[in-house]
Figure (cartoon, one colour):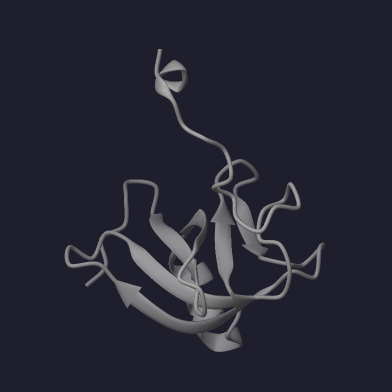
Length: 106
């Protein structure tokens, strides 16, 4: 059984099915997960816009789902996908392209 947070969302990690690279972190509600399963492409719930969104609707850079897994606690999902272009809205392959350092905390 999945464990959704108090807003009905669960974190979803997207990993490149071929390289293993982590591409992004998004959030999904039950409807986004249903649409992901039904379409074979990743859907998410936008916390800022408070609506469902299909990854690649505007850019064409969809994420073709290869597999879904839940973690041992059921409070996170891993989607292995084949990206049809850059995953990040900045045009970068992955959303994780910025170095992290102590100043990010302080």
